[in-house]
Amino acid sequence: MLKVKDLHKKFGDLHVLKGVSLEVSKGEVVVIIGPSGSGKSTFLRCINHLEKPTSGHIFIDGVDLEDPATNINVIRERVGMVFQQFNLFPHLTALENVSLAPEKVLKVPRAQARERAKALLSKVGLSDKCDSYPDQLSGGQKQRVAIARALAMQPKLMLFDEPTSALDPEMIGEVLAVMRKLAEEGMTMVVVSHEMGFAREVADRVLLMADGVFVEEGPPREFFTNPKHERTKAFLSKIL
Amino acid sequence: MVFDLEVVARYLPFLLQGVGITVEFTLIAFSAGSILGLLLALARISKNPIFHYPAVAYIDFVRGTPLLAQIYLIHFGLPQIFGYTPVGYIDALLALTLNSTAYIAEIMRAGIESIDRGQMEAARSLGMTYVQSMRYVILPQALRRVVPPMGNEFIALLKESSLVSVIGMEDLMMRSRMMAGRSFRPFEAYFTAALIYLALTLTFSRILGWGERRLGKSAQG
Ligand SMILES: Nc1ncnc2c1ncn2[C@@H]1O[C@H](COP(=O)(O)OP(=O)(O)O)[C@@H](O)[C@H]1O
Ligand SMILES: [Mg+2]
Image (cartoon, rainbow over all chains, first blue to last red; front, side, top):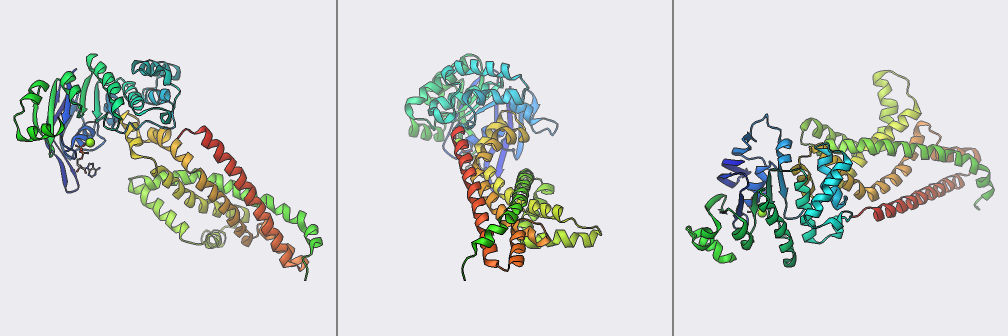
C-alpha cells in the first residue's frame, strides 16, 4: 500500500529526514511518536508531496511519486490528510467543506456530493452541524469535519498529523473515537500522535522518530513495555 | 471680496456635467483594474519567473512614477513612437486603468498572502489543483478581506481621475478650470469643484461602508 525507501529531506542546510524507510500494508494502523522537531510532520507531508523529498522514493499502491509521469493530484485524491490545526475552509459550511473536493475534483454532481457529505458528517456524529460554519464549531467538532472532508475523497490511506494536539482535553475522546472506528473499518492509517491509549489499543505498530530517523519500531505492547533503545526509553519516560 | 454665490449658481449645471465623466472614468478604470489587478497579483505570486518578474517590474514602474507622467507618456509619447493620432478619451481611460491595476494588484496580493498557508495545503491535500485551490478556497476568503482597501483605492482613483483634465477630458476638474477662466472667479470655481469632489467621495465612502457591513454579516469568518 505505502512504501517509503530511504527518504531524505533537507530545508537548505537543515537535514530533517535522514534516510527514512517504512512499509505499511493495507488495513494497517501505524502510530509515529517522537520529540518535537524530529521530522514527523515533514515525513507525513512528504508522503502526499506537500513537501518535495530531497531524495528517496515513495510508492503508493506501487506508483512512484518521484516519477515525473505521476500526477500528484491523483495520488492526493487517494491519500487523505488531517492536520493539527484542522485547516477547515472558514467561508464554507461544514457540509460544503466536505462536498467541495468531490464536486470539483471528482466531478460528482452537486446533489450527490451533498448527500454523501451528509452521510459522512453523520458518520462522525455531526449530522446536526451540516449548515454550521467552522467558526461556530468546537475544536473537536472541527476536527471531525476535517476527517469527514478527507474521507469524502474515498482515500485508501489516511495521514493524521497530531490530530488531537490542538484540542481541549475533553474533546480529544470524540476525535479518537472517530479514528478508532475508521481503523476498525479497515482504513490504512499513519498517525502521528502522543495519545498512548490510542496507540496501545488501535495501532498495529508503533515507531519512534528521533532526529530524522526511525529509531525503533514494534507492536505497541512490546514497544511500550519493553523498549530496546535508550532514546525510546528516555522519550517514553517523559511522556508516560 | 465676497464669495459670489450667484456665479456658483450660474455655473453649477455646467460643473455637474463634468461629474458624469469623472464617475464614468472612475467606475470603468476601477472595474477593469480590479480584474487585471487580480490577474497581475496572481502573476506576481507565481513562482514561475516568466510571470513573476514582469509583474514585479510593472507594479514597481507604475507605483514608482507619477500618474501625470504616465498620462503624458501614453497620450503624447506612444503616438510619437508608433505614429498614430491619439484619442484623449481612450488614453485617459487607459492611463487610469493601467495605473489602478498596479495598485489593486498589490492589494490583492496582500489579501491572498494574508490567508493562512494551511488553507492551500488542505485544498491541495484533497487533490485540488493549484488553480482550483485558488478559485474555491483562497480567493473567496482573500476577496472578502480586500474590500476595505479596495474601497480606499476607489476613493483615491476618483480623486486622481482629475488628472485626465490635462489631456482635455471635460471632467469636473476641467470644467472648473473653464469656469474659472470664463467667470474670472477662480476661487468660486475651484472651491465649488472641491466641494463636489468631497460630496462624491463621501457618498461613495458611505455606499462602500454599507456594502462592507452587509458583506461582513453574510461572511462567516
Ligand atoms: N518549510 C520548512 N522550512 C524550513 N524548515 C522546516 C520547514 N518545515 C519544517 N522545518 C524544520 O524541520 C524540522 C522538523 O520539523 P517537523 O517535521 O515539523 O517536526 P515534528 O513534526 O516532528 O515536530 C524542524 O527543525 C523544523 O523547524
Ligand atoms: Mg509536527
